[in-house]
Length: 365
Ligand code: FAD
Ligand code: UDP
Image (cartoon, rainbow, N blue to C red; front, side, top):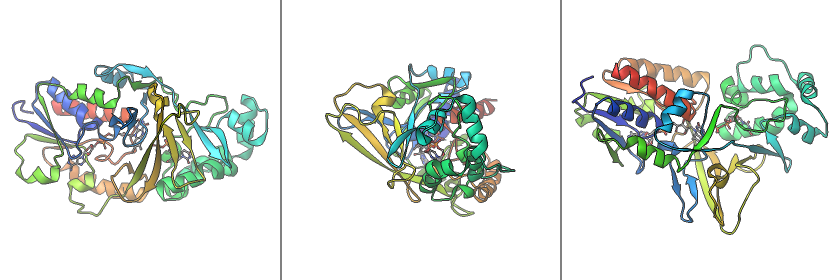
């Protein structure tokens, strides 16, 4: 790549910001645009009207096993150790989730130890071969009763689909444990950016070779561009003007609420409601951020079909459609596609950072 000619990065989320910084650090001039009025993509956080740090687009908890990725981001932030815990509400009672030994004991009035829990799962599981769908994954590991109590309705609500219509990888995100570990994640690094995600992104984009323009839609400038290269992190079907039709993405409506004079609303960061309500879960931000405040702020997530694209929907037919767009992408000169929307992958933040570092390396050559 010629260093003197600018690269345009579309999207100031993890994918775009990491690539921009890598290019800038190697002497390239980079122009970053985002159609939203802020940086940080879906990881954007801000103080709400009451001074509580909240995540506008739903709870973002950083976790990774990648030393390199953690080290990379540590250039731009200090961290606050945080291990996320979740409770699932079934018939009005709160149980540890992911399902572990305590979940079984509390739910069924048992006193199982590790090997007892293992034997329990062995007894109730419905072996499936091969394991192709999310229904297969759960029935194969914990059997029908736990499937119906914790997974079936949550999944229908979240995706508008039955678990049998989703690839195995969706439910496989959730482990099943025979011990009493009640953490949502077991990654080596689990921490939140000490001053929030937005501040971390500000540091990442703070470079003399980077200019950032917000409220600029790629669609409005694409026909007048004079740049050496484009790094595109928006939805891939939008880039190709939906020529093969729309790729399905699942959306959410976030209902934020501040509760004055409530020091703590719930015991843990997130409470899941598989069977009740139109929302899937409630998250209380102070657990995640460690912030002290006289009141508290929470968010409820209501899944919906229309709206901003938040989740690619992992099913065979969608992936087949994505492959058609990917073929076009491979032959699109001077454009790199990277990120959760551009690669149509159910990526966590750390995976996007990894993909962006790899893309930048290829670009820099
Ligand atoms: P995005 O963050 O979506 O950034 C893409 C950017 O491109 C956006 O800002 C968008 O405005 C911009 N853009 C798109 N089209 C255009 C255009 N035409 N012109 C200009 N700009 C454009 N991951 C975790 O690791 N842990 C979590 O706890 C976690 N929780 C999540 C909770 C929710 C509710 C959601 C939706 C996601 C969560 N994630 C979590 C995933 C995480 O948000 C993503 O992995 C990550 O933010 C993706 O980064 P990205 O840069 O690929 O995409
Ligand atoms: N899931 C479920 N019940 C729960 C939590 C998760 O059935 O209480 C299933 C559901 O299909 C969900 C998937 O597991 O979409 C992945 O959950 P995760 O918490 O990783 O979702 P995310 O945080 O990405 O929305």
